[in-house]
Image 1 (cartoon, one colour):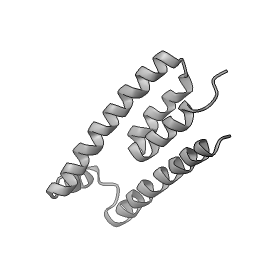
Image 2 (cartoon, one colour):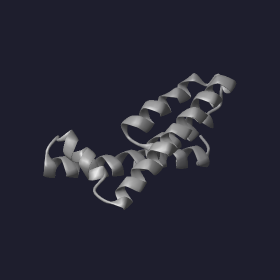
Image 3 (cartoon, one colour):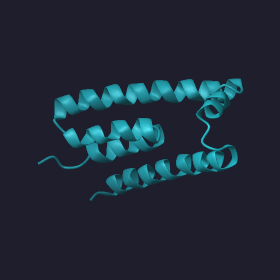
Amino acid sequence: MSALRWIFLGLTVVGSVLPMWHLILWINLNGLDVSALWHAVFINSATTGLMFDLTISAITLTVWIISETYVRKNWVALWAIPATFLVGVSCGLPLFLFLRTRPII
């Protein structure tokens, strides 16, 4: 496996652990209250702007994943879509790049 693929894989792990770590900390403090989490997204302009930025990035990444998968027939790369929406763009993007750079047999 190339050094670039190892970097993408490492970024996938870090991009999974860090967001989930902070989400777990928030849940430990506030409980599993989805309405409070949704309210926290709109608590100020910075968090609202970040939410819109990440949502647009996730949609853009999904369109790219689907179009690349259709052209390259690299169906395993579709795993990056649920990773993007269940964990975040910080996990989905490096995972997609890791899967995209693998040799297709």
